[in-house]
Image (cartoon, rainbow, N blue to C red; front, side, top):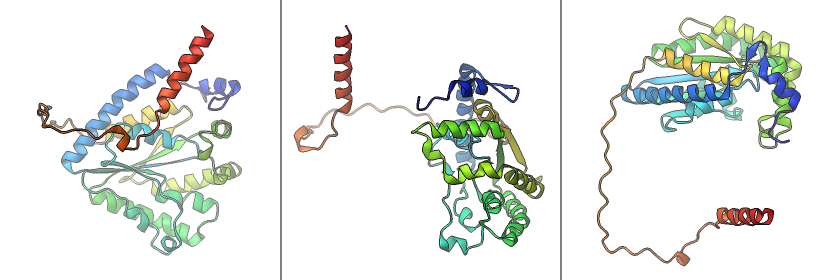
Amino acid sequence: MPGKVKDSGKKAAQQLNGTQKLPRQLYETELYRLQGELVKMQEWVRAEGARIVAIFEGRDAAGKGGAIKRVTEFLNPRVARIVALPAPTERERTEWYFQRYIDHLPAAGEIALFDRSWYNRAGVEHVMGFCTKEEYSWFLHQCPIFERLLVEDGILLRKYWFSVSDEEQQRRFRSRLDDPLRRWKLSPMDLESITHWEDYSRAKDEMFVHTDIPEAPWHVVESEDKRHARINMIAHLLSTIPYHQVREPSLKLPPRPPARGYVRPARDMQAYVPDHAAELMAGDGKNRADKG
């Protein structure tokens, strides 16, 4: 059935590498509490003019997008922006590698969440041969320098690596193939990554050697269970930001003024969308009557 994991996959998902799946009610209760704290953090960012950059990296289907979605669910999109850049243009390929990412760094009072980032060069570009060995070496040299400059300038930089086993990744790929609503998440590059599992592992290890620096350390998120991963990642992010409750301005709804003779135009003078919901309700009522 589309959108559902096969029975065997469901059983496997209940216990993943010894990690018991977080019960839904417990997960949703804690997630809602943490999302309330994220809203408080957002208001602190606005009030203090802080700048936060959170980088989400990891294996394909490791749960990065789902975590970002839960982080931003109740945040103001004018404050918290998701940065998910496409492949570079021909012009961008001639620029300094970090240049196109700089345009998306936050200004005062903003949060930027990078759904993949400049670390593409250390991962997919290196493994799949989209950059030269010299470009790869320059990246490993320049990246720590670049990130130290960001931190020295006051940006709060947090880097998360979502880790998932090859078995669980395979299960998630298979579930996406069977789900027409999520099949778009799979690309030929994702499927090709299966045959380069160890190459990506070596690339990640080498990346950590060069870029896991005191000023901007990596934080690994175990993502065999997505609920665990989301809760752990959000809780950690909040624990590293020195936010506090910001006094909110007192708001009060004003009384509505009395009518002053305005007459609404006739409905037939404007184009309304068809009432699809009413048709659904009518059809549902007919079905119920037929069953009765």
